Each structure stands twice: as C-alpha cells, then as structure tokens.
Image 1 (spheres, rainbow, N blue to C red):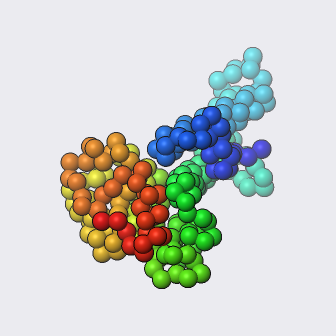
Image 2 (cartoon, rainbow, N blue to C red; image 1 turned 30 degrees about the vertical axis):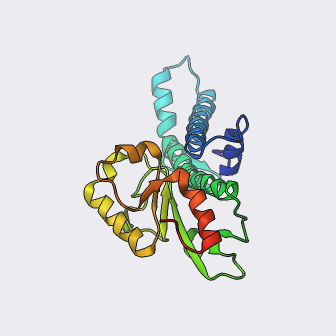
Image 3 (cartoon, one colour; image 1 turned 90 degrees about the vertical axis):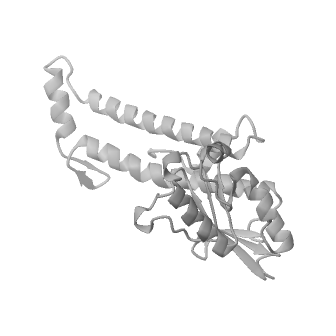
Length: 234
C-alpha cells in the first residue's frame, strides 16, 4: 500500500466538490489532504505494530523494545521502527507536495487558455514550466517559470537563485521576505523581465513591496498575455 496517494489523486480529491475553486484555496485544500494522509499512515503503522505486541504483559517495555529494534522493510534495513516510518513519509511527502504546487500552477495556465504541449511544457529546459510565444513549434520567445511550494529556500544550497524568468509559489513564511531578500528577488526578476508571484495574503503583509511582485492569482492571465503578445505585461 502506498505511503501517500499521488499528487494527481490528491488534486482530484480536492476538486471533487468545487471545480471553480481559486488557486490558493485549492493549494490549501490539497495540503490539508496531504497532512491527513500522512497522519493516517502513521496511525496505520502504529496499529500494525501494536497487533504484534502482547499488551497485557509489561506493555511499556515491550512497546519500547519493539519500536527500537532493527527492522527490514521491502528489503531495506532500518535501525528502528520510527526511522522507517519517518524516512518513508518524508521521502513521499516532499515530492508529492512539490508536484501538487506544480499541478496548481498548470491548472491556472490551462484555465487561461494555454494548451499543454503547444503553448507550454512542464519540466523541460531546466525549468518547471516553459511558456512559448506564439507556440512551441514557431517559438520566437519563451518564458521559464520555477514553482516553489511554501518556502523560498526549499533548496538551501542555492540561496534565493531560481531556474527561470519568473518565480511562482504559495509562500506562507513572511519572515523570509526581508528587505534584502525582496531586493534580491526584485533584481533577479527585473533582469529576466519576469515576476515573483506570491499569495494575496502574503503580499498584503510584506512591508517591503518589490516592483516585480505580483499576486499568484494573476499568473495564468499574465502567461496568456505572453502567449498572445510575446512579452510580459507591464
């Protein structure tokens, strides 16, 4: 049984009751589902463990011993139960969470009339998305987008650098948007002609408003303009 369902399945579940939900509400709903599935996985693994324990006899020592003894799962040995649980969950959680953010961005592109494989592609040319003017076969100009989930520094070794002309995300950590960080992102986007797309709630709270910062709800419309005109809106 998979640790957590795929990003596509979680997205479909989040859209089940409302296909017209806005992008930030959709992302929040998928994240809630992701957390729920992770909790259910932990609970299932603990239940499986307790089924093997003779509860009436010195329960505390037996549970402790069982949790801390080495185990082998799918041919891989772990030092103890909790190492296996936490590693499997983290390995599944992070890529699925990132894929959900990309699927949310992709949905915005499609909602605004862009066609995958014609107007844009995903995960090519060292970018999460590449948008083409006027299309991929007659390309005159392209715009590359990096998608992040909730943190600017998801890959700490790269600092604030990103692969693309624009940065899109569901950032929720206001402390990351210091005056110096806002200036760095502003300068990076100014050089590429792109924007840093952030959630409305965060943009309202940032005290240092950058010139290249826009609402992530404008992302799809801006890319639609790029496909029609070959340049980003001013």
